[in-house]
Image 1 (tube, helix red, strand yellow):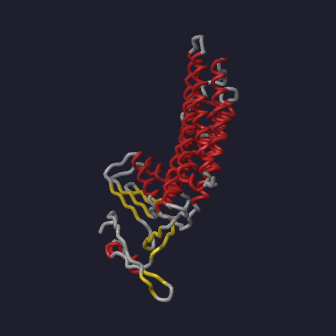
Image 2: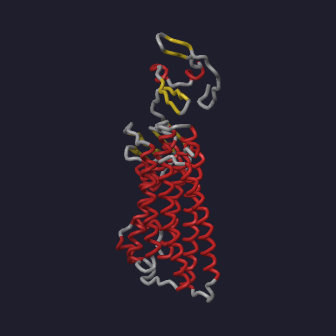
Image 3: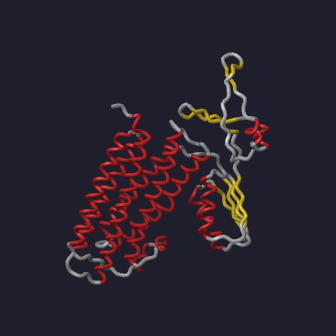
Length: 369
């Protein structure tokens, strides 16, 4: 039997001793265990809803991969996939690895978990998990919501001040860059890893699926916040990767100190700021409904977001149509920036609406009328 074959059978429960019960386990399943697991003959039991899940005593999971050539994108995906799939030991061998690839791999591994110890050579990259400590999944979800709330608050400040106060804008950009790279992604991937290792307490299998969906959607909220920082970077004439440099460097390399917006574009920016403020409030409502497992509130929140987004889009494009005079090149750049910001903020609203709708599907039946 391979690890990918499925066993679906029915067993009779028999009485064993005084008050105990037992069942016979399928021989094929036992044969699929590792030598260490067969020797120990121990199982872990997980109770979820009316299901009892049995798993052999978990040994350290190892993933080894061998490739001839590898790109930066493939390297990142191999490391992330091994981590999310619960690997305690990971090794990737290639014909040759550049110093840049090795440096990139070590950065990714450090970002994922401080307990992962990376090693490398000119043809090998690996990590070993040095700790068995697991962060509680529901606490991680609450923390991820908190980090994203902080991020949306920073984006709101950035939209309000990027034109009138570029120095503050640069400071906010650096904070957002660090938040996305070091906090949001790491927490989302830790949640996914916990699910793959069954290190999670949950009321139902459906809720486990919801938690994975939440982690994925919240990570995409973080990606959208990062896209907004990219738009402002473009407006300032900065590369996104330059945000890791000191503030003094960034202030010296922005294309201008004067980013005054034309009146029509200012009105657009004011609408975007208002939408971002509402997005922040909706995220807090969604967080509360999910953590409280309140399906009715989650559904009402989703409906409110959908209604608000429709009105916001109509209001914004109506103002765009009323910008009568031709725009100069510099003014046109700011006009395009506002359009990009608006689309990203509306995407944040749509992602938050999706979070609320999915949680309502799972938790709505738990609410009394």
